[in-house]
Length: 609
Image 1 (cartoon, rainbow, N blue to C red):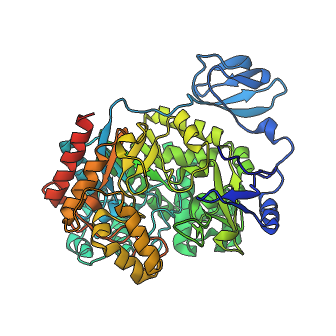
Image 2: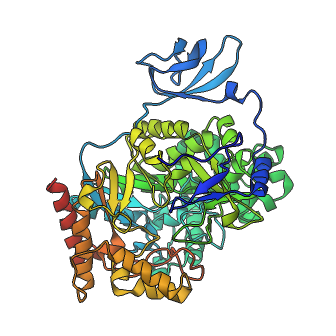
């Protein structure tokens, strides 16, 4: 096992290992900058930060009362009984101090049976009734198709909300919040009260005529009609009750969204008096703009209704991005816990020699503890809600994150460590409560101990045909197995060389690098003649995937319809990433011959185990 680098009192690693196990030292200037940004934790932090434990554990406290979630008061004497209830409790010391006690089962919930399913970029899955973008009614149709085919799950891209402004953020991985949904995914005709207004549906459906997904035009159209529905209907008592149940969390989101429409998507640029949640000026703003705040809350109610109808009883695995926009709602609410002047990214590697800067501000580890882990808990819980599954993007971020100083390049960063054991136990608790499986996206450079910790906590690994050197039959059982991801070539794109041609067009590598990369991926697709068709290549790839004993087998709709373009090409900034519709409409998917073949192959792989 490779020894871990030295970590200082701020959680900063002094060095890092690349994919070739070569060690790189972090510049002292970078370390000094990050220490200043992280700051000194209060001296009494360890006495007030949450205790995360499991039933039967010994605790670092002697006799104390525990006020449980249900209001019951239990006394403990230095350890938790084996039958102690799971959940979020409060530890009350004899001196009157109170600190959070989080009791976790330690392992995520997992289904008993293996299953196969579809991975869907929902925005791309348009139907004849869509208004330019795949929506929650289209997800319902895909879910029904999956059920009829015998699939056990659908994996979808992040549906989290972005700023409700004219220029819509295209990337699902840079949301304004990880707690609320994007109303662009609403099927307008199915919103309560839609029958009371003229929807002008022909104009809405015409948004699908273009070759790309035009989010700006789509949101402008949907917002105008949704606003008319809201003022005509308002949601009635059902919405009022739901809104009251959501409390301040929803009110904060709706307020941020309302201010954003007036003052822009970055709270740092707002009038000074609006930059702090809970300020007197903010209360005045909410009163003066009550209708707009209510509208944004109402949109979330409509989304909640439609997501519930879309998922039904099938497991829908939602995707949790690694971060959120620095000017967004979550950054506004939790600004005290965020690092200012840095962003999250990745060091240089074989796929990107310059490193990566993803643009999201990181949470400061000690401030996350001081906030009782609430930013993390709320994000995990909200993304799991009503779906039955969670995929954690870049799960290595629960262990360490690459911090990139604002005045340097991605290569000038350093790793900062997080309390991974606590975070994994929280994920396990939320998984247990929601009966939701959890997949960790552990691709790329994974340091020693990460996959072992994931396995211990019941977090499924993520294995790709394009990356794995082992035969699929030898892949681990506790994993989700797939061929590719949204950032990598589709089977058709790889086989026809269309993906390399597009990479060359956008200058993402030299001819030698691109051809070497393609050859490396093709080596994972043996058993095909050079003149094999796209359909044969796709079928062969899924035959190999079906040999995996992994708990979940996942196929993309892009591969199943022979799409040559990948959803996202990192580094190709002029490309319409995240804006490419599927070439087959949702209604036509069940009858697509290649898709039917893929479904039969994966169903056969599950059935033969």
